[in-house]
Image (cartoon, rainbow, N blue to C red):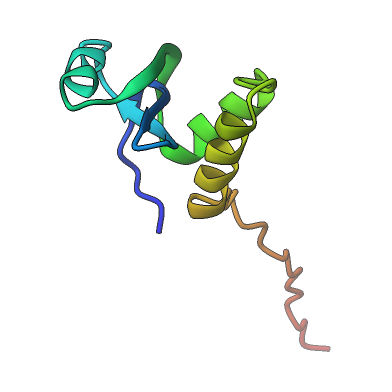
Length: 101
């Protein structure tokens, strides 16, 4: 289930051969990831704070990592786990008042 928490930075890193999308609020996260053994850390500043769902849509729209199958798969996984649930369109029902004759 997606949350409403927002992030200012997003990107990918690889740990033990597995590439995953990473979310953060500061690019200093790179140091922590590297310290913990992550490789190929690529974080980008987002245009504004976004939810995971918005980040997934943004990464797709900017073709982030389009030439890297591992990054493409990681983005697809985030999309799957955080599906877009746009505003529900409500049916409009026109009510007519009965007028006594």
